[in-house]
Image: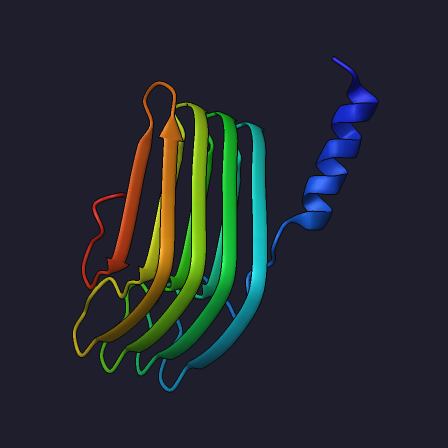
Length: 167
């Protein structure tokens, strides 16, 4: 294997990988959190073993209350290739919310690909993950979810309020 080429590819991939917009993770988020995010195009790629490629626009995780998210993405491409990798695209998503959650998410084109053994391709548009008072409004142009190889898992969740069955 040509290590300098591998390093150059890894550097190129990390420079091209899309960054999440307006993201709050972990910990406790309480009351009146509002996120407005928009992105034209995002690309995240994970190659090798045990890696994750994630495109996340919007997103609040952990315990939350009074959350309002408006997230818009033009095109998202998320690719995982190798063994035990995860490709995950998220537009919206609140997770563990507790009351008055409102998510409006829109995406033009979304492609999530997992190739290899024991990989996961997961696409989420909208999604709240429950604890009541949720309102989800979703607009999607096209979604493509591709898995190939042994022990693969592919999930597309559009709208979704409770568990998504792909955790």
